[in-house]
Length: 166
Image 1 (cartoon, rainbow, N blue to C red):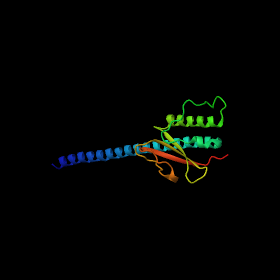
Image 2: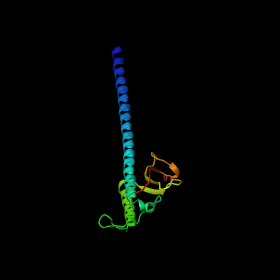
Image 3: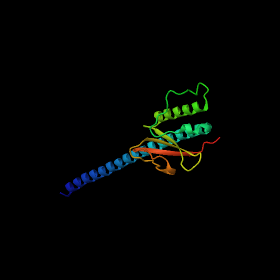
Image 4: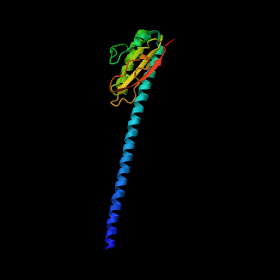
């Protein structure tokens, strides 16, 4: 009689071990999913920094025309401007072409990418570049830094401040 009780106990041990194993695997899958989310967020921040840095360098090289780089959220650049890669351009045309390149980078590299370029209030010749991308969880927001325009809803933003002088 005692032998039959031991066989039932072994079945309960096996079920408990299987439950522990399943919970461990589910925990590993959840951690893997969280790592993928964090990796994507970091990738978007890196891409946004590259786009902002590229525009900052363009503004630095064309500093006399820095006012032509002003852009608000949602404003699209003129797609019919000059092609300064194949022909010589004046400085105003170069600024227009730079903004076309910015828009092309936003469209191709960030999900629903957008940008704003603005003069900082109270700081002479200082400009801000804010790059935004679709992020429903808004994981990377830097609102109201130095009086800058707020980041649009359901988007993460990266800001860069520059002083384009030459």
